[in-house]
Image (cartoon, rainbow, N blue to C red; front, top):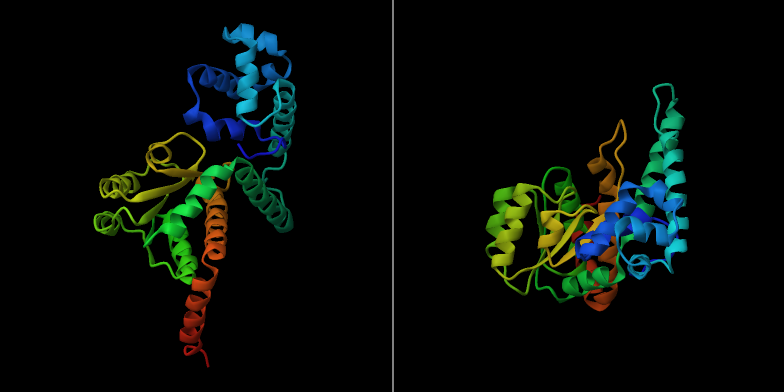
Length: 285
C-alpha cells in the first residue's frame, strides 16, 4: 500500500478488509473491536489471544502499511486519543454561529484527510488509466450522489472524452445496456448498497463495460462488484449524516481523477477547452 506511517490504522484496515485472508480478518476484527487492548498488549499476547503465530501478526502490520507491530500500535493509540478529542468538538446547542462554522470546517478537513489516507496508489492509477483509454465515460448516482455525478460530467466534458451523467435509474440501465467493453462507467454510492446503482452495475458488467466505484470504506456489493473501488471516509454527527459529510470526499476524488486525466490528455484537452470557451463566450454580454 502506498501509504505513510501517519496513523489512520482503522481506516487502512477497513480499506483492505475484503482482500484479507481468514487469519488476517481475525486480526483485523480484533483490532477494530478492541483497540485499547491492542495498545496495552505485546505482539506475543495478541498472538496468544487470537491463537495465531507472532509472525502472522507482524506480517499483518506490514500488510496495512506499517514497519511492524510497534509502529501500528503507536498509530492506533494516536487514533484512539484523537477519537476522544472529537467527542468534545461536536456541535452543541449553545455554540454561536462562528463556533458552528469552525466545527463544520474542521469536520470537512478531517473527512478529506481521512479519505486521502486510505487512497491506494495502485487502484487510483488503474482508474486513471481506464478513463484515459475510454471511448466514453458515464457517471451514475442517485439522490445526493446524483449531484456528484453531474459535477463529474461537468468537469470531464473539458477533457474531450464523450461523457454524460444519469441520476434516473431507468436512464442508467438503458444507457448501460448500450455501452461496450471500450467504455467506462463510474458508479457513486455512499453505502454501496443502493439497489438501483447495483442494477446499473450488473447491466454494465453484462456488456463488458469497465467499472469504477466511489463508495465508503465498508465492504459492500458495489465495492466488491466494480473493477476498481475508490473509497471515502466520513463520520456521522448529530447534525450531518455520514453520507452528507462524504460528498466532499467524493468531489475531491472526482477532482483528482479529472486532473490526472487532463494531464494525460493535455493536447486534446486544450482543443476541447478552446471550443468550449468560444461557445460559452457567446452567452455573455
